[in-house]
Length: 377
Length: 198
Image (cartoon, rainbow over all chains, first blue to last red):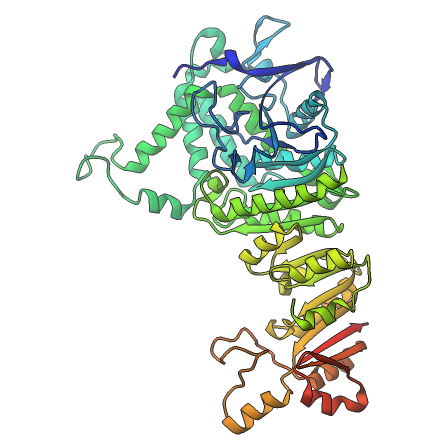
């Protein structure tokens, strides 16, 4: 695949960023994309946070890969998040590989790609970095911050770090901390990458290698966890590829096998293996309970933010129970919170596919919130 | 809005904090938000209705009051509303007491099983009553624990709950229920609306 990084929009932040790990980034780049127009009052901005494998290209065409944006179904003209009306901003997370500062970028002190010399980052670091985008656009307060999965974690973290800078927050299909199972899946992915000799202790960019197999397997493991048992069964069942019977070999006999392989290897073309290590680590370290001495309510205390928490019935990676814990914590401090569990067959990935009940909830919440917010500012 | 919802809304103070348990499509809550400037919250078990409520800008949680009320802190609301759904809970007594833990006062409305038309159907026809306020047949009714206004009074006495206001609704007319007219109101009211506290 030909990737075209030349058209990426970037801002260079000169301010130092003290990371959770203790290291200070003296400055960093934020690659971003925007959709729609910021109105005169600057009260129609929506900040979208992307998930593990996502990027700043929320909708329209991803100018790097030349494919559709990852949330084309939800964001765009006349979509649930209507870019005729709202100004949608999304940045590539730091540690990512779509133009923001991360392990793939050149370390100014050595002139080589950072590789494993890049400091370990957290969700908090990612969010602190992205807040600079709001300053750049002169936006005091966004209408909403939102995202699914890791994007949802960022939406939660944003509320704890910058309670005055958003009117509403929509954490989707996420949790306030990573569970043992979440960490286990991420560790499986990291081990797959690091077991690939081509990974070369993280130096593959310098040595001209590509850990294709490791990253592809990592993605395959991830992909299984994003789908529901029923969803996979409905889509593939025991369907064989073109042949009529099994071949008694280890080639891909079943459709589900070739599907997984395709998902894995096409991912390698657009994603950096080290970024995968860094971002999964950041997710594993995410723990709003720990950040608040075990009391999740404290994370949000005193904030006037309107919350809309959304989970999906067949999401076993971030099950509804995890969202409910957030709802309970918010309820106990009297926060303004809405919560819906969307019944869907599509597992964790439900937020990325055509799910009308989800889109309706999203649209209803955002539009009604805007009616209140625009009278306030 | 239904006539009885209007009566109910009349019991809510301006600028108060309100929890509507089983808020349905959120119309009552929206009315209270607009006209009484309440800081309102809702719980609703039906996902579609939650979506409708959320689209109206209301803070509504999809959940089962029977299980989820426990997560609300003591006295976090001025009023908790239970609008014609007390009879649908497995443990209505517990729910009622939970409401009075969460809120300073509760407003509970019940379809009165003591209403004369209801009684007559059972006595004369020998079938389970089907009326305007009890539109279900026995095999598809969500109502598990039907009660009369008198039953409600008795439960309040048993649990040391004070009934501050007690309103009878019949043919879209309201009147006060008192101890002295309880027997007759129990016969003539289609709906009972109660403002209670502990």
